[in-house]
Length: 219
Figure 1 (spheres, rainbow, N blue to C red):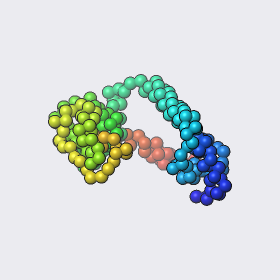
Figure 2: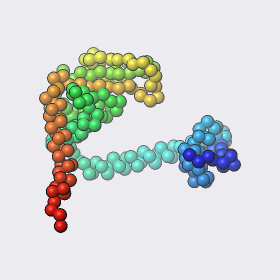
Figure 3: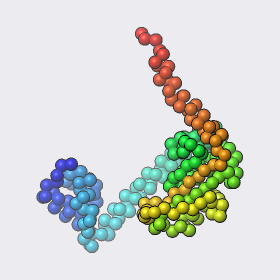
């Protein structure tokens, strides 16, 4: 990374004290954002400039939220519903990327992913709750009761029916708010084979055009 001259560093820090955002500073000086950040990350903004800086931060968050809402609406028009045939495809793709290959189980920190997995299995394969073995995995500095309650609401299974609640060594507060959730299906061998079969069929569609091109006669 190219070293930023001392004169430019002083300009960067002055801009920051005046309440300029990182993108604004990057537009004003000839330096990368990562390089600029190293020189402003611990720098205090002057008290009289804090209100304007706070508005900029809020504005950036608002723009991001508006973009996400727009995309949500746009994709909802593109995919208005999931049919009975499409749900197993979504489930198999999700499991293909995140699931265990030895038994039917998956562990993740994303509640939407866990909720989608377990609800689609209920819908597609009519699995009752007693087929699921749910485990909560948290860390020493997290609120165990709060985490267990969160995952219980996510999977719609009572905490008393959880297979285990594990507390792991280490601190993850601020990184993993609720720890992790592991979902395993008992006697899931046939289910794993079914999902693998769906994945194989999907993969065949991806390689078929290539194979056809290889077999095409040369002109």
